[in-house]
Amino acid sequence: MTPHDLIAAFDAVAEAPDGVGRLRELVLQLSVRGRLVPQNPADEPAGVLLERIKQEASAYRSRVTIEYEQEKPADVPLNWEWVYLGDAMALFNGRAFKPTDWSDSGIPIVRIQNLNNPTASYNYCDSAVDEKFCIDSGHLLLSWSGTPGTSFGAFVWEGGRAVLNQHIFRCEPRGRAFVTHYLRLAINSRLAEMIERAHGGVGLRHITRGKLEGLWLPLPPLAEQRRIVARVGELMGLLDRLEVARTTRDGTRAAVRDSALDALREADTPDEVEAAWDRFAERMDDLLCDPADIAPLRETVLQLAVRGRLVPQDPADEPASVLLERIAADRAAAVAAKLTRMGDDPGGYDEEDSLPVGWEWTPLQDVVQFIDYRGKTPPKTANGVRLITAKNIRDGYVTDEPREFVSPKTYEDWMTRGFPKEGDVLFTTEAPMGKAALVAFSERFALAQRAINLHPYADLDSKHLMWILLSPWFQERLRKRATGMTATGIKGAKLRLIRVPMPPVDEQHRIVARVDELMSLLNRLEARLTAELNTHADFAAAAVHHLDT
Image (cartoon, rainbow, N blue to C red):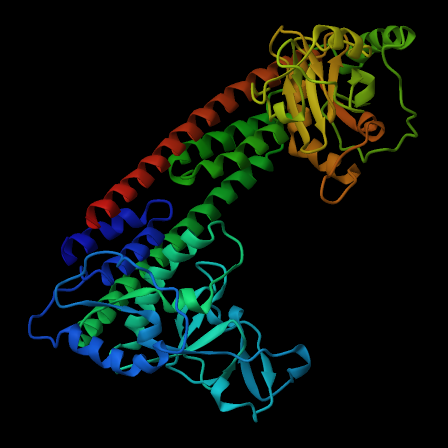
């Protein structure tokens, strides 16, 4: 790998997901492996530096316990050496301040959160604090507690005179053998691997002094350290500019995309919606660059559908009031057969928006039979009749996993409130709340807790009902009536009374056809964007691997 290869790859790799992050890590690793700048045989070899370090470190070594790494991590250039962190520097811990020690003025106290964010708020202490805890600009600090990538690792302090809090070491390099900024690179290049090996995960970590001091650090000649620091600064500056350019470009694209979506949402008639959609579709390749961009479009489609703006109304359609009369007859029969019960409706339960001509408002319980088994889950068996729980119900479909079962006898004994069947709609009331899926299979199944089966009366289009339940309009009303903090849920009694907009049945079919058409288009687009994103990520990984070999 040459410097030219590295720079040539920057623009392309930086466009990939986390491409800039990958390149920053690559620059760091190359810098401490002797591959970022050329070696100069005229440089004073690192062995001379190592001897100076050992002379100063010998007394310290004899009186402490260090958990030394036994094997050196990798090969380094011939004129480099390896040195233990504990030999390379002396570590002085910060003071264990108590909140009662803080004051409103004096010397700022540097805590972990101030290391990567100098603008974070500070506490202060009396100016008479012991000098051994004090630092100034240019000091190397080593945080041994925190989270990787944020406050864990080595930092060069540039915030002026201050005092250290606990969990941070002030580092005093030995033997005049290190450039401070190179030492920061060397420590951080080894710490990330060490932390992951020792702790794993992403939470708060701590590393003992003994483990830190036993860490191998690569030691180049002093002159090469200076060249490395200069080159790293140059390349990191280039990456900063690439990142800013990409952020600016993405921000501009997002603003244009959101403006186009707003125009689509605010269209008042189906004709205006169609025109706004055509304008959006013409620029879709420019406006949608990430799979996450598809979700707002799906929501917009459903929002337009439930407001009667997605397809035109037809005055010849049988009005929804006639559909509701047929539904009332079916509902009365279900109530008489004790297949369902009706909740008390005090009226005024929802603020009702204006509806297109021919539409009606109706409580959910008036148009569907509730088959509710939320009290508990039946005993499971290794095979038998399929059991569907809230975990199987997703936005628009039922998943095969987890695949659970109840015995045929349990199924017969359990399903006394009614049998779900193909064409019904499943709805989750908790953990997670608000998922809805069409039963698109004929296989019999039992229903478990946290899920309700909604069986449409008469000729109500069940898929249209599903799209209503998944729409942002309905989800907002659901959240307003939900209870609970960590596990939000909706009580069946409240769910029953939410009023839904009911179009004529023929218009329901037209809405479903148009929603299906647009959702299919968006699914294909999402799949393409995902494939492109994965391709970019694979390219970035391959490019970084090539540069690193």
